[in-house]
Length: 486
Image (cartoon, rainbow, N blue to C red; front, side):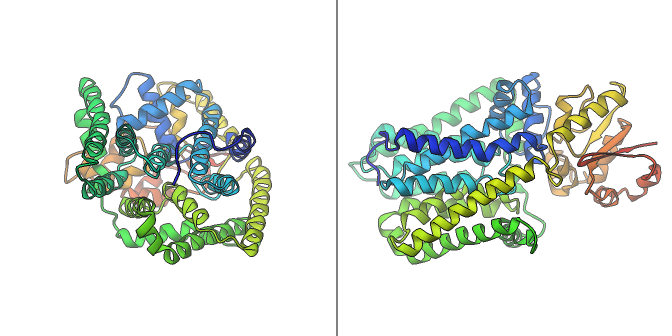
Protein backbone atom coordinates (compact mmCIF):
# COMPACT_ATOMS: atom_id res chain seq x y z
CA UNK A 1 0.00 0.00 0.00
CA UNK A 2 1.07 3.59 -0.58
CA UNK A 3 0.12 6.50 1.60
CA UNK A 4 -0.05 9.34 -0.89
CA UNK A 5 1.29 10.76 -4.13
CA UNK A 6 3.94 12.77 -2.30
CA UNK A 7 7.38 12.70 -3.87
CA UNK A 8 9.15 9.41 -3.23
CA UNK A 9 11.80 9.48 -5.93
CA UNK A 10 14.73 11.80 -5.44
CA UNK A 11 15.78 14.01 -8.33
CA UNK A 12 18.57 11.49 -9.02
CA UNK A 13 16.14 8.57 -9.53
CA UNK A 14 13.86 10.72 -11.67
CA UNK A 15 16.79 11.69 -13.88
CA UNK A 16 17.81 8.02 -14.24
CA UNK A 17 14.28 7.06 -15.35
CA UNK A 18 14.24 9.98 -17.78
CA UNK A 19 17.68 9.05 -19.10
CA UNK A 20 16.63 5.46 -19.84
CA UNK A 21 13.41 6.72 -21.45
CA UNK A 22 15.47 8.93 -23.75
CA UNK A 23 18.09 6.29 -24.51
CA UNK A 24 15.59 3.61 -25.59
CA UNK A 25 13.59 6.02 -27.78
CA UNK A 26 16.30 8.09 -29.51
CA UNK A 27 17.08 5.37 -32.12
CA UNK A 28 13.40 5.31 -33.09
CA UNK A 29 13.67 8.66 -34.86
CA UNK A 30 15.62 6.90 -37.59
CA UNK A 31 13.24 4.02 -38.34
CA UNK A 32 10.41 3.96 -40.85
CA UNK A 33 6.96 3.98 -39.30
CA UNK A 34 5.00 0.81 -39.99
CA UNK A 35 1.58 -0.65 -39.33
CA UNK A 36 -0.93 0.76 -36.84
CA UNK A 37 1.02 3.93 -36.10
CA UNK A 38 0.79 4.96 -39.77
CA UNK A 39 -2.96 4.50 -39.59
CA UNK A 40 -3.22 6.73 -36.50
CA UNK A 41 -1.06 9.38 -38.18
CA UNK A 42 -3.18 9.32 -41.35
CA UNK A 43 -6.38 9.69 -39.33
CA UNK A 44 -4.84 12.36 -37.10
CA UNK A 45 -3.86 14.33 -40.20
CA UNK A 46 -7.45 14.16 -41.47
CA UNK A 47 -8.62 15.70 -38.16
CA UNK A 48 -6.14 18.54 -38.55
CA UNK A 49 -7.68 19.17 -41.97
CA UNK A 50 -11.16 19.27 -40.43
CA UNK A 51 -12.19 15.91 -41.96
CA UNK A 52 -13.43 14.09 -38.87
CA UNK A 53 -15.16 11.08 -40.40
CA UNK A 54 -13.24 10.47 -43.58
CA UNK A 55 -11.77 7.08 -42.66
CA UNK A 56 -12.97 3.88 -41.04
CA UNK A 57 -10.99 2.36 -38.19
CA UNK A 58 -11.92 0.55 -34.98
CA UNK A 59 -10.99 3.36 -32.60
CA UNK A 60 -12.97 6.18 -31.02
CA UNK A 61 -12.61 9.79 -32.13
CA UNK A 62 -10.89 10.44 -28.80
CA UNK A 63 -7.90 8.30 -29.84
CA UNK A 64 -7.61 10.06 -33.18
CA UNK A 65 -7.73 13.42 -31.39
CA UNK A 66 -4.73 12.39 -29.27
CA UNK A 67 -2.67 11.47 -32.32
CA UNK A 68 -3.81 14.62 -34.13
CA UNK A 69 -2.58 16.66 -31.16
CA UNK A 70 0.84 14.95 -31.14
CA UNK A 71 1.10 15.38 -34.92
CA UNK A 72 0.24 19.07 -34.60
CA UNK A 73 2.76 19.62 -31.80
CA UNK A 74 5.43 17.87 -33.86
CA UNK A 75 4.80 20.15 -36.84
CA UNK A 76 4.04 17.11 -39.02
CA UNK A 77 7.67 16.00 -38.61
CA UNK A 78 7.41 12.26 -37.95
CA UNK A 79 10.84 12.14 -36.29
CA UNK A 80 9.72 14.73 -33.74
CA UNK A 81 6.44 12.80 -33.47
CA UNK A 82 8.41 9.73 -32.39
CA UNK A 83 10.20 11.68 -29.67
CA UNK A 84 6.93 12.31 -27.83
CA UNK A 85 7.11 8.63 -26.94
CA UNK A 86 9.82 9.59 -24.42
CA UNK A 87 7.23 11.49 -22.36
CA UNK A 88 4.80 8.56 -22.32
CA UNK A 89 7.46 6.01 -21.36
CA UNK A 90 8.88 8.28 -18.66
CA UNK A 91 5.48 8.95 -17.07
CA UNK A 92 4.60 5.24 -17.08
CA UNK A 93 7.95 4.25 -15.56
CA UNK A 94 7.61 6.96 -12.93
CA UNK A 95 4.09 5.81 -11.98
CA UNK A 96 5.20 2.16 -11.71
CA UNK A 97 8.01 3.20 -9.38
CA UNK A 98 5.45 4.98 -7.17
CA UNK A 99 3.87 1.63 -6.31
CA UNK A 100 6.80 0.52 -4.15
CA UNK A 101 8.09 1.67 -0.78
CA UNK A 102 11.54 0.24 -1.48
CA UNK A 103 13.64 2.76 -3.40
CA UNK A 104 15.78 0.16 -5.16
CA UNK A 105 12.77 -1.89 -6.27
CA UNK A 106 11.06 1.28 -7.46
CA UNK A 107 13.92 2.20 -9.76
CA UNK A 108 14.51 -1.35 -11.03
CA UNK A 109 10.80 -1.84 -11.72
CA UNK A 110 10.64 1.43 -13.67
CA UNK A 111 13.70 0.53 -15.76
CA UNK A 112 12.48 -3.03 -16.38
CA UNK A 113 9.14 -1.75 -17.66
CA UNK A 114 10.84 0.81 -19.92
CA UNK A 115 12.84 -1.93 -21.64
CA UNK A 116 10.01 -4.44 -21.95
CA UNK A 117 7.55 -1.90 -23.35
CA UNK A 118 10.03 -0.71 -26.00
CA UNK A 119 13.05 -2.80 -27.04
CA UNK A 120 11.55 -6.15 -26.02
CA UNK A 121 8.29 -5.61 -27.89
CA UNK A 122 7.86 -5.66 -31.65
CA UNK A 123 5.56 -2.63 -31.51
CA UNK A 124 7.58 -0.80 -28.88
CA UNK A 125 9.39 1.38 -31.40
CA UNK A 126 6.29 3.50 -31.95
CA UNK A 127 3.74 5.46 -29.92
CA UNK A 128 1.03 2.84 -29.63
CA UNK A 129 -2.38 3.21 -28.01
CA UNK A 130 -1.07 0.78 -25.38
CA UNK A 131 1.59 3.28 -24.33
CA UNK A 132 -1.09 5.94 -23.96
CA UNK A 133 -3.73 3.87 -22.15
CA UNK A 134 -1.49 2.55 -19.39
CA UNK A 135 -1.06 6.06 -17.97
CA UNK A 136 -4.70 6.52 -16.82
CA UNK A 137 -4.79 2.83 -15.85
CA UNK A 138 -1.72 3.17 -13.62
CA UNK A 139 -3.14 6.34 -12.05
CA UNK A 140 -6.37 4.49 -11.20
CA UNK A 141 -4.37 1.61 -9.71
CA UNK A 142 -2.15 3.89 -7.62
CA UNK A 143 -5.20 5.60 -6.14
CA UNK A 144 -6.98 2.33 -5.40
CA UNK A 145 -4.05 0.90 -3.41
CA UNK A 146 -3.76 3.96 -1.19
CA UNK A 147 -4.45 3.29 2.50
CA UNK A 148 -7.12 5.99 2.54
CA UNK A 149 -9.16 6.54 -0.61
CA UNK A 150 -11.40 9.61 -0.52
CA UNK A 151 -14.58 10.36 -2.44
CA UNK A 152 -12.64 12.60 -4.81
CA UNK A 153 -10.20 9.74 -5.33
CA UNK A 154 -13.05 7.47 -6.42
CA UNK A 155 -14.27 10.19 -8.76
CA UNK A 156 -10.79 10.36 -10.35
CA UNK A 157 -10.66 6.54 -10.61
CA UNK A 158 -13.92 6.62 -12.57
CA UNK A 159 -12.52 9.33 -14.85
CA UNK A 160 -9.31 7.36 -15.51
CA UNK A 161 -11.13 4.11 -16.29
CA UNK A 162 -13.49 5.89 -18.69
CA UNK A 163 -10.54 7.51 -20.45
CA UNK A 164 -8.90 4.10 -20.79
CA UNK A 165 -12.01 2.55 -22.36
CA UNK A 166 -12.22 5.44 -24.82
CA UNK A 167 -8.62 4.72 -25.84
CA UNK A 168 -8.93 0.92 -26.02
CA UNK A 169 -12.25 -0.95 -25.96
CA UNK A 170 -10.86 -3.98 -24.12
CA UNK A 171 -10.48 -1.88 -20.95
CA UNK A 172 -14.26 -1.89 -20.68
CA UNK A 173 -13.72 -5.32 -19.09
CA UNK A 174 -11.51 -3.87 -16.35
CA UNK A 175 -13.98 -1.03 -15.81
CA UNK A 176 -16.87 -3.48 -15.50
CA UNK A 177 -15.01 -5.86 -13.14
CA UNK A 178 -13.91 -3.00 -10.86
CA UNK A 179 -17.46 -1.63 -10.83
CA UNK A 180 -18.78 -5.04 -9.74
CA UNK A 181 -16.01 -5.32 -7.13
CA UNK A 182 -16.87 -1.93 -5.62
CA UNK A 183 -20.56 -2.78 -5.76
CA UNK A 184 -19.96 -5.96 -3.77
CA UNK A 185 -17.95 -3.99 -1.21
CA UNK A 186 -20.61 -1.32 -0.83
CA UNK A 187 -22.01 -0.51 2.63
CA UNK A 188 -23.37 2.46 4.58
CA UNK A 189 -19.90 3.89 5.14
CA UNK A 190 -18.69 3.82 1.54
CA UNK A 191 -21.93 4.26 -0.41
CA UNK A 192 -20.98 7.82 -1.41
CA UNK A 193 -17.60 6.56 -2.64
CA UNK A 194 -19.38 4.33 -5.14
CA UNK A 195 -21.64 7.21 -6.22
CA UNK A 196 -18.59 9.42 -6.86
CA UNK A 197 -16.98 6.55 -8.79
CA UNK A 198 -20.07 6.18 -10.99
CA UNK A 199 -20.24 9.94 -11.49
CA UNK A 200 -16.60 10.05 -12.62
CA UNK A 201 -17.17 7.03 -14.86
CA UNK A 202 -20.17 8.59 -16.55
CA UNK A 203 -18.93 12.18 -16.79
CA UNK A 204 -16.18 11.54 -19.35
CA UNK A 205 -18.47 9.48 -21.57
CA UNK A 206 -21.29 12.05 -21.35
CA UNK A 207 -19.00 14.94 -22.28
CA UNK A 208 -17.46 12.89 -25.09
CA UNK A 209 -20.85 11.88 -26.50
CA UNK A 210 -22.08 15.49 -26.40
CA UNK A 211 -19.03 16.64 -28.36
CA UNK A 212 -19.25 13.97 -31.05
CA UNK A 213 -23.03 14.39 -31.33
CA UNK A 214 -22.48 18.05 -32.15
CA UNK A 215 -19.93 16.98 -34.75
CA UNK A 216 -22.41 14.49 -36.27
CA UNK A 217 -20.13 11.65 -35.24
CA UNK A 218 -22.45 9.52 -33.13
CA UNK A 219 -23.22 6.96 -35.84
CA UNK A 220 -19.54 6.86 -36.78
CA UNK A 221 -18.62 6.06 -33.14
CA UNK A 222 -21.16 3.26 -32.85
CA UNK A 223 -20.06 1.68 -36.12
CA UNK A 224 -16.31 1.86 -35.52
CA UNK A 225 -16.04 1.54 -31.74
CA UNK A 226 -18.22 -1.56 -31.59
CA UNK A 227 -16.56 -3.23 -34.59
CA UNK A 228 -13.96 -5.26 -32.60
CA UNK A 229 -16.75 -6.66 -30.42
CA UNK A 230 -18.47 -8.12 -33.48
CA UNK A 231 -15.29 -9.37 -35.18
CA UNK A 232 -14.44 -12.87 -33.94
CA UNK A 233 -11.04 -14.06 -35.26
CA UNK A 234 -11.29 -16.63 -38.04
CA UNK A 235 -8.95 -19.12 -36.30
CA UNK A 236 -10.44 -18.59 -32.85
CA UNK A 237 -9.39 -16.73 -29.71
CA UNK A 238 -7.33 -19.57 -28.19
CA UNK A 239 -5.22 -20.13 -31.31
CA UNK A 240 -4.41 -16.44 -31.66
CA UNK A 241 -3.64 -16.16 -27.93
CA UNK A 242 -1.21 -19.08 -28.30
CA UNK A 243 0.47 -17.30 -31.22
CA UNK A 244 0.60 -14.10 -29.17
CA UNK A 245 2.56 -15.94 -26.46
CA UNK A 246 5.06 -17.30 -29.01
CA UNK A 247 5.54 -13.89 -30.59
CA UNK A 248 5.76 -12.22 -27.18
CA UNK A 249 8.57 -14.58 -26.18
CA UNK A 250 10.33 -13.88 -29.51
CA UNK A 251 10.54 -17.65 -30.06
CA UNK A 252 9.69 -17.10 -33.74
CA UNK A 253 12.91 -15.06 -34.05
CA UNK A 254 15.24 -17.73 -32.66
CA UNK A 255 18.48 -17.96 -34.56
CA UNK A 256 21.77 -19.14 -33.13
CA UNK A 257 23.60 -16.12 -34.54
CA UNK A 258 20.88 -13.54 -33.97
CA UNK A 259 21.10 -10.90 -31.25
CA UNK A 260 17.35 -11.39 -30.74
CA UNK A 261 18.43 -14.37 -28.60
CA UNK A 262 19.07 -11.79 -25.88
CA UNK A 263 15.45 -10.74 -26.18
CA UNK A 264 14.35 -14.37 -25.98
CA UNK A 265 16.31 -14.94 -22.77
CA UNK A 266 14.96 -11.77 -21.16
CA UNK A 267 11.40 -12.37 -22.31
CA UNK A 268 11.43 -15.95 -21.03
CA UNK A 269 12.83 -14.75 -17.71
CA UNK A 270 10.26 -11.96 -17.42
CA UNK A 271 7.13 -13.92 -18.32
CA UNK A 272 8.22 -17.11 -16.53
CA UNK A 273 8.99 -15.14 -13.37
CA UNK A 274 5.60 -13.45 -13.62
CA UNK A 275 3.80 -16.77 -13.97
CA UNK A 276 5.74 -18.45 -11.12
CA UNK A 277 5.26 -15.50 -8.75
CA UNK A 278 1.59 -15.42 -9.63
CA UNK A 279 1.07 -19.10 -8.80
CA UNK A 280 3.16 -19.04 -5.63
CA UNK A 281 1.53 -15.90 -4.28
CA UNK A 282 -2.03 -16.41 -5.52
CA UNK A 283 -3.42 -16.84 -2.00
CA UNK A 284 -1.69 -13.66 -0.84
CA UNK A 285 -3.05 -11.78 -3.85
CA UNK A 286 -6.59 -12.94 -3.07
CA UNK A 287 -6.35 -12.02 0.62
CA UNK A 288 -4.18 -8.91 0.64
CA UNK A 289 -3.86 -7.50 -2.87
CA UNK A 290 -7.01 -8.39 -4.76
CA UNK A 291 -6.78 -5.07 -6.63
CA UNK A 292 -3.62 -6.23 -8.42
CA UNK A 293 -5.30 -9.57 -9.11
CA UNK A 294 -8.30 -7.78 -10.65
CA UNK A 295 -6.08 -5.70 -12.91
CA UNK A 296 -4.02 -8.73 -13.99
CA UNK A 297 -7.09 -10.86 -14.68
CA UNK A 298 -9.19 -8.17 -16.40
CA UNK A 299 -6.41 -6.85 -18.66
CA UNK A 300 -5.37 -10.40 -19.62
CA UNK A 301 -8.99 -11.21 -20.45
CA UNK A 302 -9.20 -8.03 -22.51
CA UNK A 303 -6.09 -9.00 -24.48
CA UNK A 304 -7.52 -12.48 -25.02
CA UNK A 305 -10.78 -11.13 -26.45
CA UNK A 306 -9.05 -8.79 -28.86
CA UNK A 307 -8.39 -11.99 -30.80
CA UNK A 308 -5.10 -10.79 -32.24
CA UNK A 309 -1.51 -11.97 -31.91
CA UNK A 310 0.06 -8.51 -32.30
CA UNK A 311 2.71 -8.36 -29.59
CA UNK A 312 2.17 -4.68 -28.80
CA UNK A 313 -1.02 -5.80 -27.01
CA UNK A 314 1.25 -7.21 -24.29
CA UNK A 315 2.36 -3.68 -23.37
CA UNK A 316 -1.00 -3.32 -21.59
CA UNK A 317 -0.22 -6.04 -19.06
CA UNK A 318 3.51 -5.32 -18.63
CA UNK A 319 3.15 -2.65 -15.90
CA UNK A 320 1.26 -5.07 -13.69
CA UNK A 321 3.51 -8.04 -14.41
CA UNK A 322 6.42 -5.78 -13.44
CA UNK A 323 4.63 -4.81 -10.23
CA UNK A 324 3.90 -8.49 -9.53
CA UNK A 325 7.53 -9.51 -9.95
CA UNK A 326 9.06 -6.77 -7.83
CA UNK A 327 6.37 -6.94 -5.17
CA UNK A 328 7.16 -10.60 -4.46
CA UNK A 329 10.85 -10.59 -5.36
CA UNK A 330 12.72 -12.72 -2.75
CA UNK A 331 15.36 -10.84 -0.79
CA UNK A 332 18.08 -13.37 -1.60
CA UNK A 333 21.67 -12.95 -2.82
CA UNK A 334 21.17 -15.12 -5.91
CA UNK A 335 18.16 -13.00 -6.91
CA UNK A 336 20.23 -9.83 -6.65
CA UNK A 337 22.88 -11.47 -8.85
CA UNK A 338 20.23 -12.42 -11.43
CA UNK A 339 19.00 -8.83 -11.48
CA UNK A 340 22.53 -7.53 -12.01
CA UNK A 341 23.04 -10.03 -14.86
CA UNK A 342 19.73 -8.93 -16.39
CA UNK A 343 20.77 -5.28 -16.22
CA UNK A 344 23.93 -6.24 -18.12
CA UNK A 345 21.68 -7.88 -20.73
CA UNK A 346 19.67 -4.65 -20.91
CA UNK A 347 22.82 -2.65 -21.56
CA UNK A 348 23.96 -5.10 -24.26
CA UNK A 349 20.57 -4.87 -25.97
CA UNK A 350 20.70 -1.09 -25.80
CA UNK A 351 24.18 -0.95 -27.34
CA UNK A 352 23.31 -3.43 -30.08
CA UNK A 353 20.00 -1.67 -30.68
CA UNK A 354 21.76 1.65 -31.28
CA UNK A 355 23.97 -0.05 -33.84
CA UNK A 356 21.21 -2.01 -35.56
CA UNK A 357 18.63 0.78 -35.66
CA UNK A 358 20.90 3.21 -37.42
CA UNK A 359 21.67 0.65 -40.14
CA UNK A 360 18.27 -1.00 -39.94
CA UNK A 361 17.38 -3.14 -42.94
CA UNK A 362 14.38 -5.06 -41.63
CA UNK A 363 12.19 -2.26 -40.31
CA UNK A 364 13.57 0.30 -42.71
CA UNK A 365 14.86 3.79 -42.06
CA UNK A 366 13.20 7.17 -42.00
CA UNK A 367 15.30 8.00 -45.05
CA UNK A 368 13.54 5.16 -46.92
CA UNK A 369 10.26 6.92 -46.13
CA UNK A 370 11.58 10.29 -47.32
CA UNK A 371 12.92 8.71 -50.51
CA UNK A 372 9.51 7.15 -51.14
CA UNK A 373 7.69 10.47 -50.80
CA UNK A 374 10.30 12.18 -53.00
CA UNK A 375 9.89 9.52 -55.70
CA UNK A 376 6.11 9.97 -55.71
CA UNK A 377 6.34 13.78 -55.83
CA UNK A 378 8.96 13.70 -58.61
CA UNK A 379 7.50 10.94 -60.79
CA UNK A 380 3.73 11.34 -60.52
CA UNK A 381 1.54 14.20 -61.53
CA UNK A 382 -0.72 15.37 -58.64
CA UNK A 383 -3.70 14.17 -60.68
CA UNK A 384 -2.22 10.66 -60.97
CA UNK A 385 -3.25 8.31 -58.18
CA UNK A 386 -1.14 5.87 -56.20
CA UNK A 387 -2.25 3.11 -53.83
CA UNK A 388 -0.07 2.96 -50.71
CA UNK A 389 -0.72 -0.46 -49.26
CA UNK A 390 2.52 0.06 -47.33
CA UNK A 391 3.94 3.35 -46.15
CA UNK A 392 0.45 4.85 -46.11
CA UNK A 393 1.49 7.64 -43.72
CA UNK A 394 3.21 9.11 -46.81
CA UNK A 395 -0.20 10.43 -47.85
CA UNK A 396 0.35 13.31 -45.42
CA UNK A 397 3.49 14.26 -47.37
CA UNK A 398 2.26 13.94 -50.95
CA UNK A 399 -0.42 15.61 -53.06
CA UNK A 400 -2.30 12.41 -53.87
CA UNK A 401 -5.25 11.29 -51.73
CA UNK A 402 -5.94 7.79 -50.29
CA UNK A 403 -8.03 5.58 -52.56
CA UNK A 404 -10.07 3.90 -49.83
CA UNK A 405 -11.89 4.92 -46.65
CA UNK A 406 -10.19 2.14 -44.73
CA UNK A 407 -7.35 3.87 -42.90
CA UNK A 408 -5.59 0.59 -42.11
CA UNK A 409 -4.76 -1.06 -45.49
CA UNK A 410 -4.79 -4.74 -44.32
CA UNK A 411 -8.45 -4.26 -43.34
CA UNK A 412 -9.41 -4.61 -47.00
CA UNK A 413 -8.66 -8.35 -46.62
CA UNK A 414 -11.08 -8.86 -43.71
CA UNK A 415 -14.37 -10.18 -45.04
CA UNK A 416 -16.29 -9.95 -41.74
CA UNK A 417 -15.01 -6.44 -41.12
CA UNK A 418 -15.95 -5.24 -44.62
CA UNK A 419 -19.45 -6.70 -44.37
CA UNK A 420 -19.98 -5.07 -40.98
CA UNK A 421 -18.51 -1.65 -41.74
CA UNK A 422 -20.28 -1.36 -45.12
CA UNK A 423 -23.53 -2.85 -43.78
CA UNK A 424 -23.56 -5.19 -46.74
CA UNK A 425 -23.55 -9.00 -46.33
CA UNK A 426 -22.28 -9.37 -49.89
CA UNK A 427 -19.32 -6.99 -49.53
CA UNK A 428 -16.01 -8.76 -50.21
CA UNK A 429 -12.30 -7.88 -50.36
CA UNK A 430 -12.57 -8.16 -54.12
CA UNK A 431 -15.30 -5.52 -54.20
CA UNK A 432 -13.16 -3.14 -52.14
CA UNK A 433 -10.20 -3.83 -54.43
CA UNK A 434 -12.31 -3.08 -57.50
CA UNK A 435 -13.38 0.21 -55.90
CA UNK A 436 -9.72 1.11 -55.42
CA UNK A 437 -8.96 0.28 -59.06
CA UNK A 438 -11.72 2.65 -60.20
CA UNK A 439 -9.33 5.47 -59.33
CA UNK A 440 -6.86 4.02 -61.88
CA UNK A 441 -3.73 4.08 -59.68
CA UNK A 442 -0.50 4.45 -61.60
CA UNK A 443 1.42 2.49 -58.99
CA UNK A 444 1.06 0.30 -55.91
CA UNK A 445 3.49 0.45 -52.99
CA UNK A 446 4.37 -2.67 -50.96
CA UNK A 447 7.31 -3.81 -48.84
CA UNK A 448 10.11 -5.61 -50.63
CA UNK A 449 9.23 -8.64 -48.47
CA UNK A 450 5.60 -8.67 -49.64
CA UNK A 451 4.49 -11.25 -52.18
CA UNK A 452 2.28 -9.44 -54.70
CA UNK A 453 0.63 -12.67 -55.81
CA UNK A 454 -0.33 -13.35 -52.20
CA UNK A 455 -1.78 -9.84 -52.00
CA UNK A 456 -3.86 -10.52 -55.12
CA UNK A 457 -5.03 -13.86 -53.73
CA UNK A 458 -6.34 -12.04 -50.64
CA UNK A 459 -8.42 -9.75 -52.85
CA UNK A 460 -9.40 -12.62 -55.17
CA UNK A 461 -7.87 -11.04 -58.27
CA UNK A 462 -4.87 -13.20 -59.15
CA UNK A 463 -5.23 -12.35 -62.87
CA UNK A 464 -4.41 -8.71 -62.16
CA UNK A 465 -0.67 -9.52 -62.16
CA UNK A 466 -0.94 -9.98 -65.92
CA UNK A 467 -1.20 -6.19 -66.16
CA UNK A 468 2.24 -5.74 -64.62
CA UNK A 469 5.64 -6.79 -65.85
CA UNK A 470 7.19 -7.17 -62.40
CA UNK A 471 10.80 -7.21 -63.61
CA UNK A 472 10.55 -4.06 -65.72
CA UNK A 473 8.01 -2.09 -63.69
CA UNK A 474 9.35 -2.54 -60.15
CA UNK A 475 11.31 0.23 -58.42
CA UNK A 476 13.01 -0.57 -55.11
CA UNK A 477 13.40 2.16 -52.50
CA UNK A 478 14.81 0.82 -49.25
CA UNK A 479 12.14 -1.39 -47.67
CA UNK A 480 9.55 -0.35 -50.26
CA UNK A 481 8.86 -1.60 -53.76
CA UNK A 482 6.81 0.41 -56.22
CA UNK A 483 4.88 -1.58 -58.82
CA UNK A 484 4.03 0.59 -61.79
CA UNK A 485 0.79 -0.40 -63.49
CA UNK A 486 0.70 -0.42 -67.29
